[in-house]
Length: 89
Image (cartoon, rainbow, N blue to C red; front, side, top):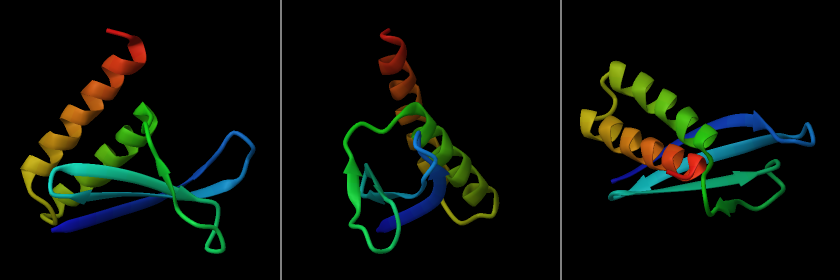
């Protein structure tokens, strides 16, 4: 089953971006675009901030019983991996 979560953020230049993360099987893909007129661009290496935002969304979704706890655990694992990569451990 494909699950899509999205949010808006502001980039370094002060522009608003739409960001989406979608899961197909056990793989999460992050995409972004400037507005509806632009195409979606895949984020090859999601940042820790992207994973934290996704963790927040999926945690809220779990509390409303809209997703399984295994989804929360999976995102938590990916977040920990991203933190390790960023710190170089």
